[in-house]
Image (tube, rainbow, N blue to C red; front, top):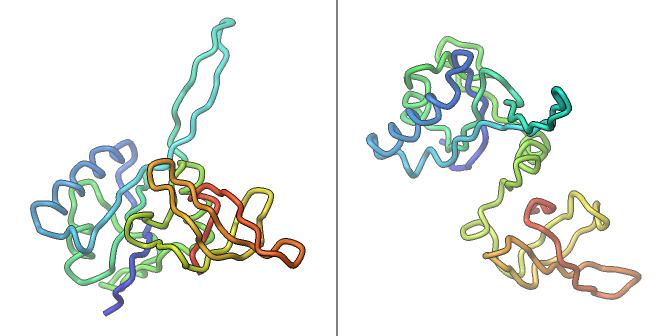
Length: 179
């Protein structure tokens, strides 16, 4: 059994994404699955619409009919999600009881960054001295070690090699990927 938190795409009835999220969070708690099912998100974007000269902000779902679930894939967790009311199945599963394929780190990082979130749980998955790679911003593509973690502001001080010297740079949590 794989003991790794990964992100999966769950297909829902169209327009039922919020209800599925709510049901899944309630089921996770009632079935005692908190150690297998972690976060359920509905990725959304905000669009500015001008109608009759009036600006309106409109929230739209990035993937209508889908929710993203962070979970450790086990038979119990798979069953709990699959049998949640409103869920029609997992994306990346061939059916016949086959386990689905998780999203790649690159795919989920882009989606979570657009939501202002990160795959990394700053309280559990990251500590000073960890090696990280910077995936966006002016230092994109560079590697370094975490020197300091500002949990409240979700910022890190990372020591990178800049012109042959160890240089501390401040980055947002969403700008890094753990090595």
